[in-house]
Amino acid sequence: MVAILANLRQKPAIIFHPIAAYVKRGATMDKAIYLAMSSGQNIMSAQAIHANNLANANTNGFQADFAQARAMGVYYGDGHPTRAYAMTESPGTDFNRGALIETGRDLDMAVVGDGWIAVQAPDGSEAYTRMGSLKVDPNGQLLTATDLPVLGDGGPISLPPADKITLGADGTITIRPTGQPPEVLSIVDRIKLVKPDYADLDKGVDGLMRRLDGGQQEPDASIRLQSGFVESSNVNPVDELTAIMALARQFEINVKMMKVMEENSDAARQVLRSS
Image (cartoon, rainbow, N blue to C red; front, side, top):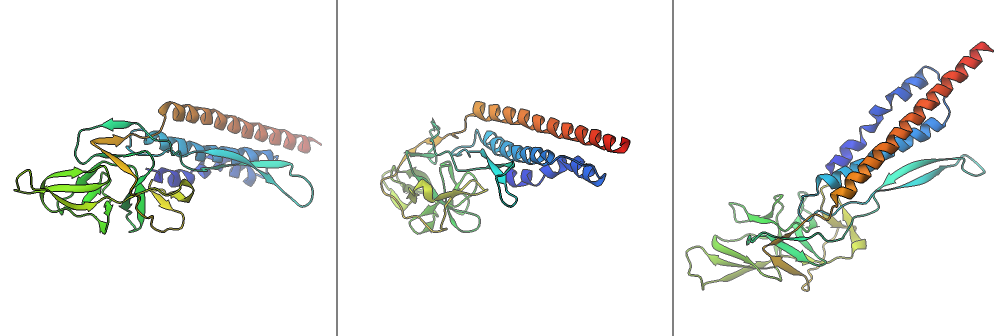
């Protein structure tokens, strides 16, 4: 999902190759062209963040990323900065909750209020998600829709063959073993539910939340699940699309500014040649 950010951040330099060509020709450009270049590059970074949000508008449990820009003053020796570069950054994650969507499926669950489902990330670390659409693989392991093992009291959860699986409001997993009558039920494990402080969480490029210190969060018995529901993404597609269009217009302004700087440079060169 969010791997698109890393890919797009490596490509903006291609757009600014004409500037490098001007330098090679010995053009005496105003330093303002570098300001426009910096702004354009960071606008593309902001577009990548909003584009990633928009691409995940239908991803269950997805938490949107914020994007903001701030001025970075350029200091040379004593005195006040005469120029400032723009810098785009993602200051955090939008923790507002998405809507609950009823599915009626036994292995779908939504976290009610604050809280997270603990899963095992591909690197083996503990991570957290609100994507509650689960499945059981042929080996009996309980997985998320993205094939991440769900953690229980003793690590990844494995289930014996069962005719029915029920998820309790506290995360308890109850099964009816294969071939047994309806009254024969067995509690096999409990999904690990956690509620860390938002300030202690960091979102990775894989879309999973982790503790900033890399540690593991203790289970929280107060968290409740709603079985048969999933949580929708909290992305507002209209807001994201509007932001992308506004950034595109800003990018065009910076490209025009670079063109004006090129024209000014050419005019100055002509004056120097004629004098």
